[in-house]
Length: 609
Image 1: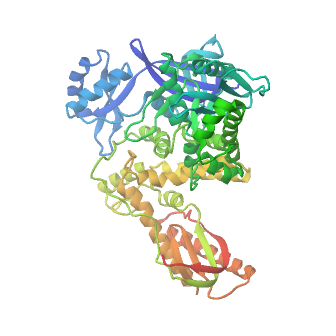
Image 2: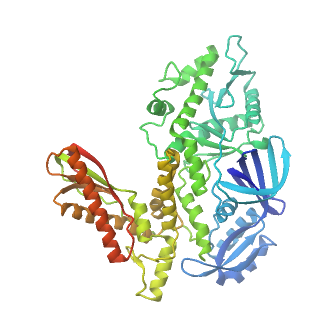
């Protein structure tokens, strides 16, 4: 078997069945992995099996329904409905829903289900029948399983320049293999060699296709590159009644408009397009302005190469008609700025590690719900449950983080103590988990004296049947290793994933949302912060403010830095020891809560909060 990393995933109905197509990057180059004859599946209540079987022949003569050892969170047994194609499965869902029959997991994509059920997160091992194609290997009758492989991705930064009406002037491309600007216009003798001259707009599109075929990037990056650059490129190609063939294997670019003010989507077979703005937001960066000029100045200390930043369109038009070399320089500088931002922030490394940890696509914006689903759903199935549907209405919100009223004033010597990843620590310590909640409630219903872990708002958690605490523990240890090894992108990816799990459980956009889960995290956090305040004040110090996981402590007068540091460390040790003893005695739990002494302010102004 050979190792690879998933760049793009699709499912296609061919003939009478469905094929999953995974484009991979491998140590030996790109691979198109085809996994044929895949069945689409969703679940219905077992008691409705006869009615469903009567409906199936109208949409798929080969569809069938059979009992499986799974149940809903309400402990209702289910049957699985299998279809020969994705299209027929969608038609089946409409017919069954129209008959007022509940169905579960009908929204999962075929390719996603295939990967997650095999615990494949980005990297995999594969085998099958191999054929050499032009520029790639095609593997049919493919099979895949999980692996641990970190790819090296080849990427290009792309940027276009155009008129107000969208007429293409030039396309800039900057990669480690080749950097150039494809420019519409007559060749100039004194122009740099990196400018490729073409006669017209259609010839520019042809030259762009040729560049992609020759240099074959895995990833295309840019600034607003999807909703502006690629959207315009596809539309200009349509103007000439042609497809824009930028995908591997000469496959056409597919553009889909977004709905309800949502961004559009570009699909390139075997290549992924990543917008720099979306990627930075996913990595939790924030800027007052997301303009390329502003972000580049903040991160790199340099900006765009243009004379008049206040009227760029006029400058671009002037350069196109009177100084094409200057326009090409400006175009390529924008490409290089984006590449430098990606390099400076290690964005590609971050996205690769996020995919290797959770299985989400490289270009997935946000992705917290998808990451949780990928990790949790296959484990849930192995425990005998199907996932619930989204709670579209009637859901109950959970309290937010703890915020204490401040004690305003100007203070000498204020310490800040922070709980390290408080919400993930609460999940690990108090065994908070969707499966644990269902199994805990089940155990309590069978025996009101059952040994469960109490939560809030009626939530109780099973002591053995759970997955999330162990998942977070694995991520926690991996982050500690990454920090020791200086792997900043890996460490940042893990931190974001761990901290997102509370948000996922508290979001009605997640199928595992339950107010008892989220409340058992936030309300436990309130309890921990209030008790910690009492512990510190019992030591003779004043707590002047606290929020979510931070506590601000006044030492009552000016202290030398060494003395303040010693007090801070002693307070942290005292609080941690108290929680270890308390949780062991009160709940029989091992405390994974850890408060840390963060810093000492010699003078501190506390406003009214």
